[in-house]
Amino acid sequence: MIFPIISFLAVLSISLIVTRLAAMALTLTGMSRESARFQARSALTGVGFTTSESEIIVNHPVRRQIIMVIMLIGNIGIPTMIATLAVSMITTAQAEHWWNPVLLMVVGLGALIYAARSQWIEKHLNKILAKILKRWTDLEVRDYISLLQLQNGYAVNEMVIQQGDWIDGKSLEEAALPHEGILVLGIQREDGKYVGAPRATDVIRHGDILVAYGRVDRLEELDQRTGPIGDAAHCEAVKELAREES
Image (cartoon, rainbow, N blue to C red; front, top):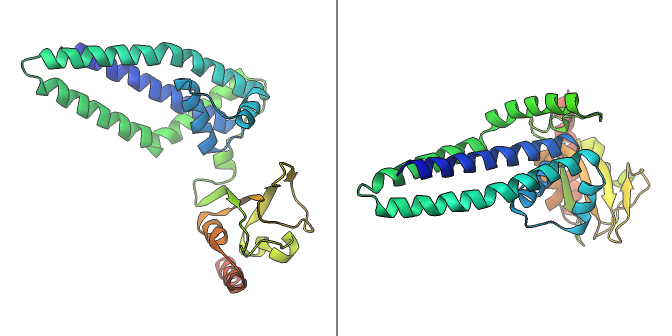
């Protein structure tokens, strides 16, 4: 009676672990955490992903191998998990003391949800996976989360420039974002052209997607900054950074 539920929880646990490992592996190859998680879950469930994102995967040898493995595991694991869940529900409905297996199911799912969200588990698995990738692949793998201090209040964010935004129509030199602790890593133009390591003379226009690195709170404030009021916000951000560095 309890064995089908334990089997279901075991299969679900393995699926979560595989997805987490695959997402971390993709992150270590340079993908953003959000994209890596989406790609890992898409591959496991077989729902697919957009053309531009699939090219990012296919054109990278390590990412391609990771996705191939997780697709294979997903084709085996998803049907198994559905079958064990169906058996669990049938046996639970037929059981005299049906609340015991239900309680086991609830406790097990709660534990899995906690483990899936645990930063401590992610941190240690990340270290293990980095060692495995460095040992078994011939590519230089970097832990970009640690390299950029992304767990210490810093982030790499994308922001879509809207008409009327404070930064709309300004060159990077005019915006002077480094003075408030923000670095622009790239600009995705509306026509699809990507400007990597942009120069000071490059102008930001509405419709562009800005790839920027800095503290999360400063990036969020910049994304909300509009019109002439933004000049005062920029000056305040510059003063705040100066106070922090002094």
